[in-house]
Image 1 (cartoon, one colour):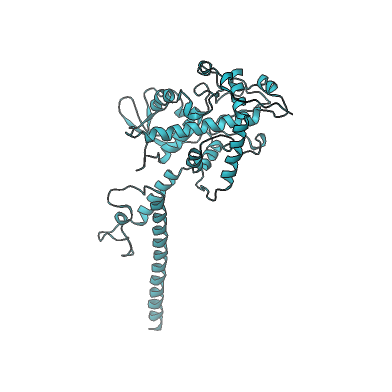
Image 2: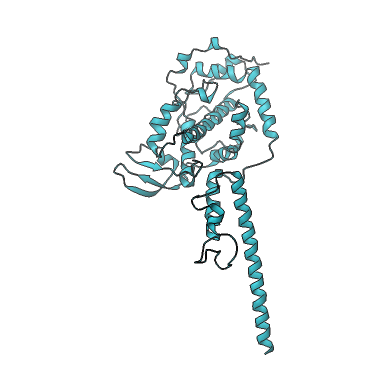
Length: 352
């Protein structure tokens, strides 16, 4: 039976954890054959090489963190399957202030910017939207899986001391946006990075840790580009009884969830923006301010308000969908009535 290591503060030296660590490169293919590690960069691991495990379930979070990340679980899973060669239609601002509309892949966005920055767009709740949000998600997936930037030995993402450094020196160098006074945008970006960090830690553990071997044997077989000390600290933490118990509770919590995010790789904010674009087209106004061709129903300002761009919460989103369905039903009914009248007129002409 394999020996189970326990995480203790004595086994860890904080200064050592802060030493530069050589992480795996997203483009590298020199990983060990018995430890196929793929970063959370959109390329994903082949289905045949993965164990049938829930990567999110083994990562220990507080209950609030766990609930907060549920809506993003589907998006995170789809991001693993997305290729980094997918192109996103975004706007960039050059070093001289020129705005350009270009198509960029995640790999291209990760190249040295040379003064170019990608313009981010946000909705009324400061969530990133549009193709820019998709590109941001892919880039954060690459950054979050880079252990030259984020050490593996920390127990909690919130304690990773390099977060601000990466945010200021990498994220803000690639993307142009105005920070809000409450730090909401920064927290959203940190959550993206944190999810990638957690996912890749779990991939490392489930691919490289062999329960049939002893703890010392597993430490000797540490992944390439991960130091022995960092791997030991990580296994001590992951194999502790407290961590294993929390993992089981997380699995139970996730099994009780009855809602799913069916939007594929798109976040709820991006889906909401697209829904509003569709609704705005359905509510396009004539001079009278009513729905074109129907002369009935609400105007777009009545649905969205005079100054709002889109619903700001889940309730408004559901209300928007309900109104759209009602309008579609009314439109179908109006067309049927019109056809019935036309049929009667045609029948009268035939009798004449």
